[in-house]
Length: 481
View 1 (tube, rainbow, N blue to C red):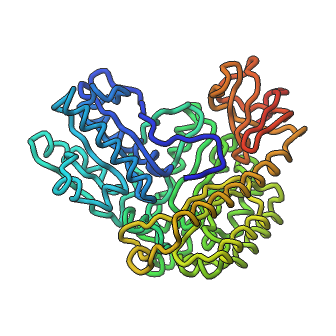
View 2 (tube, rainbow, N blue to C red):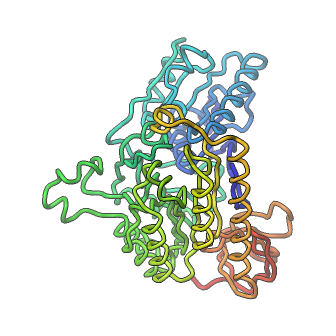
View 3 (cartoon, one colour):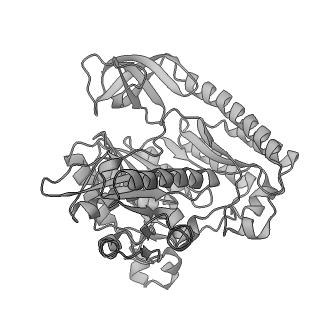
């Protein structure tokens, strides 16, 4: 994976506030998207009530869980290496340790881990975490355990997540699960099921609770947040069957965003991820209406070629995407926009690649996540298309778009020079213990001398220097919230 951004949370061991009465120990790691990290907080909450305290020491764990990603082959290979590590520790130090696989890789491979490879004790899909106590009881009795059944209702809205590895400032709030967009390259619809939304009342209760606990920023999270639609429960695809009253009182994403912004006007709000075909301008207008909603949209395009977009089953065209970008910038001129891009998709030609480069030149994204295509088993692309772009060509094209994005990122970042930006302090800078690190509303990392400020402060910072991804400056005072 290539990306133009400084921060990376992949594979962190996670820690929570423990109960003194709990005697068993859990070690949990998460890989992949933000939803996996959010799901691990759900799992930690469930296991905490089952007598497990979380540890960072792998060797002392009674139970080891890895929350997995199947989006690309590299992610799966990383997980397999971790499973080798877990089993080596189990063999050499802790024979009673139990090992489990959670998440998308568990859903995709199902019984393969248990029956063929015999490297784990339990396999649990993304919709089955409430069944963990029952599955663990089976394991404790010497049996293998598996639950990878996709749910049509589960949103975990009734579980208060335990904030893992928390800085006490930023938090994830899940609002939807699943995806109905059958992109030919993507495994998510097969591993996380159909789209369903969470009760807005439970979302607001979670946000209010986070504010009371001192958190200052939330990210509303979903595979496709713009598809949020609450009409009393049920799958989004069944909305047309809803009653007239349900339809009249339904809450879409723009309305939810409005409710959240009003509920905690001093809480900074982000959201991720959007889909170009589903992002409506009422969402952008709501962003413009409230100061506490960050002016940043992550808007994956995947390719700048109409032909490749059609092969990907992306339900937007290059022209529609550009029109959406223009509309966003008309409503919010300084809105930061970031991207996901895949190079080397089956049948991609040099002209298709140039179309992508030209689109990037037009948009000039603030930053992006860029990947060489990797075939994912079970997807339409894997079943119907030959992975026919040679590796060396993929590698060269990827480097070209990474270099172009780095240039654009530097241009965008430099626009902040000699301006004052608001920064929410999240942690100490990795490079200096005399500096704080935080993010602007545009999701740009900024560092500045600590002075008398503290984590959780909103600080006005005058920017005096920058790299392609990081702002450098000096604090000029607390921001007036």
